[in-house]
Length: 272
Ligand code: IPD
Ligand code: CA
Ligand code: CA
Ligand code: CA
Image 1 (cartoon, rainbow, N blue to C red):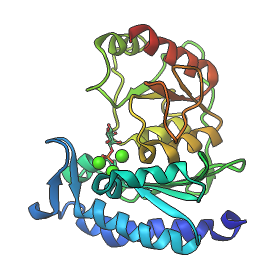
Image 2 (image 1 turned 90 degrees about the horizontal axis):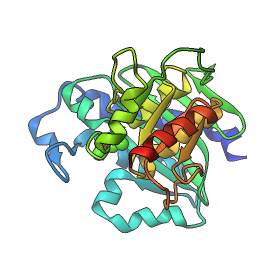
Image 3 (image 1 turned 135 degrees about the horizontal axis):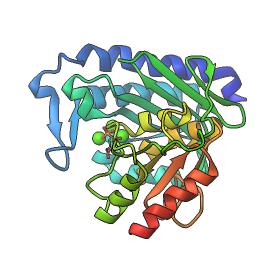
Image 4 (image 1 turned 135 degrees about the vertical axis):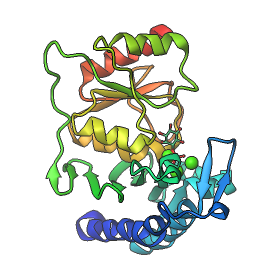
């Protein structure tokens, strides 16, 4: 099978994209290397573009017949997103997740790669080069962080739920209050600024859940498998798992266990 032979080659490609195209620009970004996309908070840099181009060459070379759906390519040509609906294996690529942190010189960004076919994610790579952390997941074979098995863990009885939500712009006030209500210790639901690192925090048991209100496949494909393989789960408001081919009821959550997921989805639904 492809993954048995080539999982390490994918890992090498992801590491090389970061070493060649992302890290040399981190904290050394020239002004002309940063552009705005949809608005002042939606940035793209040469690191995003060039790392995606690198992976768009390297990944299909490992798996002939496969195609790439990448954030920046879809921005240039929205029709390329439709490859997710086809039959060919798809590499889903977010070259820099957390571009804003990257631009600000913060280490909290990562490269996300997922390998999917006909809507099922089979493997994923979450690589945070500035933190020197690589999380991988293979369907049915578990999740690992730097080689060590990842477990989402079970909640400690009586402790407050720790939930992140990285969509303040889209969350209604009621939903925010509902989430805030869980944090009786006074801390607020936080956003990591990188969806990929929020999934990793759930998979490590650092967060109990994270909630999202948009469904771009490159933000979620790697993370939903990572959380699943770490023993966690994900759930949309209709009570179904999140699907990378779209049609989800939003917002949705990825959580350490089914009970937590149902609780968070319930809170989000009440406030909607
Ligand atoms: C962003 C991050 C962030 C989320 C934004 C995303 P990008 O991805 O995942 O956490 O709040 O909505 O767009 O643009 O840095 O790849
Ligand atoms: Ca972006
Ligand atoms: Ca992203
Ligand atoms: Ca991105």
